[in-house]
Image (tube, rainbow, N blue to C red; front, top):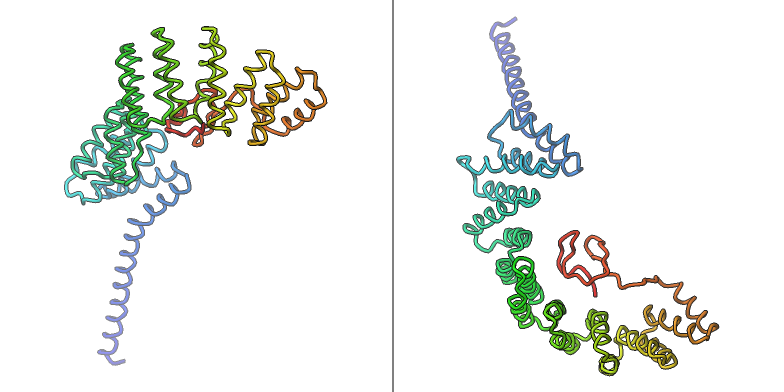
Length: 380
């Protein structure tokens, strides 16, 4: 065999073997560096946080410079409820040298979420302030800042942040700003008990949005506590003018107050005026009918309910009252017909307001859900 040919063949085999080994080694290194992180991401998306955490722990132990893996490791800890541990990891990452701009943003966002979900609201606010000092009016950060301010009941600064958010989104929301102003007043009451100072805030809220029922109700309650009954009645009447559809929120207290003052005729006049100006206001119709029934004018109460049902045939409240009035007037056959109609509908003894976000149910008008913290999630 020719020696040159043999040497060339052996050299070629060795070269292929070495190249194959290098390619295999490189492939194994790449397989080791990337697939575990990708697998952890997949597990996290599937909700298998514990498994993802174990994989990421190995990844960061093998490669302490893998910032993305560290961030994700902390994020999973937060989702598992270990917010303080997550915050410790993310905070340590903020002092790393050589961070890319996007990595810095990702770390700070994760840290802010750690604070918020761990109810470390002062720390969250400080973190958000620091981020905004460098990024300006970043919408995501402003929204998280607002969450922290609300949790801290810092309504004045919450309003300032809300205005910034509205400027960024181009969606003005004066009702929310008015709610915050009312909350300022309620905070004054809770902390200092100063009725006058609180009422000043309620009136500021009305200047912001005079259709919001909340400040009128709080003003009237404040006056009642100060035994200024006439002023309370004036606030209720003012709400009737500005937002008659929300007038029913005052009916129970209005009736109790005027009955105590023996001003029955005034109450009837209020209801009739509401109906005359807003015939579709079925709650006012039902309130007037109940008032007339108490006076012994059941026939008029029945007629008013029937007239109201012609305009609003879906009204359960009118139908329920009509059933009661017919039965009390001895018209059992007609009452039975109406009663069967009522049974086909969802019967409620009291007004119920359900949170559109979490389903929490209350019998009182609330502007913020006590369960999920959402504003204006109840429909009145």
